Amino acid sequence: MPADGIFSGVFSVLPTPFDSSGDVDYDGLKRVVDLFIGGGVNGLTALGVTSEVARLTEAERSRVLETVIRHVDRRVPVVAGATADGLRTCLEFTRQARQAGAAAVMISPPRMPKINSEAVVRHFSEVASGCDIAIVVQDYPPISGYAMEASLLARIARDIPAARTIKLEDPPTPFKISRILEQTNGIATQIFGGLGGVFLLEELMAGAAGAMTGFAFPELLVRIVRAFRSGQVDEAADLFYSTVALMRFEFQEGIGMAIRKEVLARRGAIAHAGIRAPGGQLDRPTREALDRVMKWAEARLAGLPQT
Image (cartoon, rainbow, N blue to C red; front, side, top):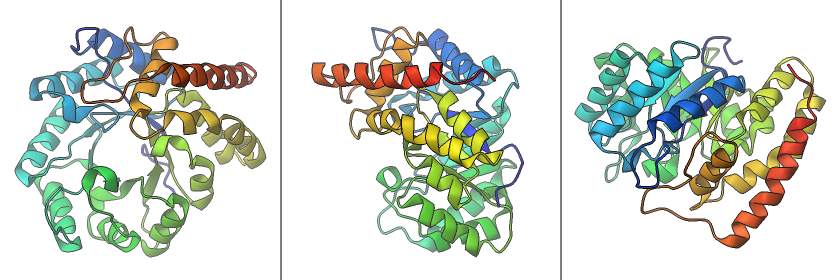
C-alpha cells in the first residue's frame, strides 16, 4: 500500500520556460510554480525530462533549481533531477540538490553499453551512501536506454532504504506496479505514475501513490487522486475518462513538450511557448486540434465544484 508520507498525491514536473530569444524565463518559471501550487499539487519536480534539462547549461541548471526552491518557499516539497551517466557527476548533482533544499533527487540508471542489473543496483547504492537524501528511481527506458524489470525495482527498494520511491514510466504501468508491490514484501514503497497521466486511474487501482508528470492541468489530476483516495472511485473514473483526451493529446511523442508549453502559454503562465532546438514545433492542424480539446477540458474543469 502507498505510504502517507510526502511522496504521494500529485507532483508536477516543471517545464523550463524560454523567452523569444531562447534564454531561460525565470519569471515565467515562477508563474508556473504558482499555477501548479494553486492547483493543489502535493509537490514539484525540477530538472526532469519535461524540463528540457538536457538542453540547459550547468549554470542554467543550478539557477533553475535555486529559483524553484526559493520561490516555492517550503509550500510543497521539491524533487530535483540528478541523472548523469557518471557516478561522480550524479553525486555532485545530488549534493547540490540537497544543499539547495530539495526533498529528494530523481535518478535514472546511467547510460552505458551493456549495463546490467548489478551495475544499476550498485549505482543507486553508491549514490545513497554518498549523500543523505531520498531518491526517486526513474524508470523511463526511452531516456535511460535500459528497461528495469519489476524484480529489479523491488530489489532496489528492499536493499536501499533511501530509494523506495519510484517514478514508473515503462508500460504496462498498472501491471508493473502490482508486480513491484508484490515483491517488496510489505516494505513501504511509493510508486508514481508518469506518462502524462494517461494511465492514472488504472495505476491508482494497482496501488500507485499518485502521479509525477508535467501535465499542464495538474488540478485535474489532483481531483482524480483525491476522489479515488476518498473512496469515490466512480467520481474519479468519470473525471479521468472525460479528461484523458487532453492528457493523451498532450503526450504525443516528439511534440508533447511543445503542446504542453502552448497550453501553459494559453493559461497565462508563460509568455513564450518555444522549446530549444532540436525540438518539434506545432503546425496549424495541431493547434486547431488543441483548440478543440482545450475547450473540452476547460469546460469540464469549470463545471467542477470548488474545493
